[in-house]
Length: 328
Image (tube, rainbow, N blue to C red; front, side, top):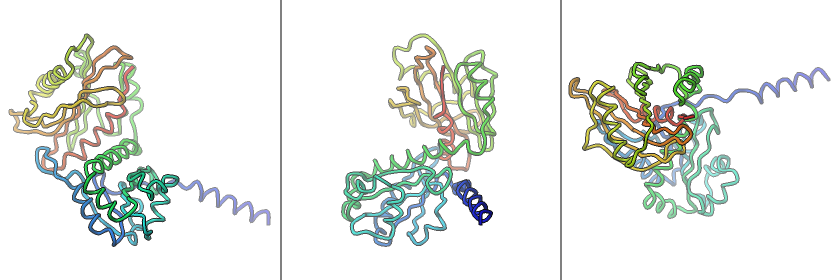
């Protein structure tokens, strides 16, 4: 009897310690799980998420599939899962929503909360999002009147999931430590990325990955910037032209806003770049900010060159790396 109890205990420990399966699927895919009663609302949400964004071409912000609760079991480990329903009267999706929402479920059912996200719920490296309302009309109104907020919620959740999961496949910790020791700043680097220090004496370090090309540039300087927005644009143009073989910012696509970068107030540039010599181009995002800990101004830039491929998933990958930036 004791031996049986001992063996049973070992089995239970082995079962409980079984590692969670890794989430699968495309980083840019969002799986909407809903009920037959929400067909119209699911179609509306699909339309919101599949908006076309101009990079150097038109591409969808996300690729969306819609399944019903009955098919969820085979889709449970997708990377980006979104549960969509109204909660009065209850449906066969309610148990899943309650399982994910936990103590927030009553706020969802009462209409005090409409969106919620949990990471690593059914698979490692997964985001499970909820978009819900109290009644059918409330859900319809939500998707009509707050479509921008819902798009931002999904975008943020997908990016955060990628930020957390990008390094599961491996990380170059020694390289990151060397960046910190040598230059006073660092990034976490997934496997496959290389550091180019050819221009380090000019305070420019590049981080690269090929096929397709993903490019990060980190530049820093001291002194004072009286107009950060104007100086940010000037430094971006300088880096593109001088250090990327005469790349140029396409003025018609340039967007400038004030935002946040890893907790610092930042000027954020986004748009497309081109190189007239080689007749090539791509997309970029640039962050300009002050690091009080080091007394430096930083320009941290990410750019993609991927002819014939969607650019947004690659830019999200670079943003995930940039989200790990630290200065000393």
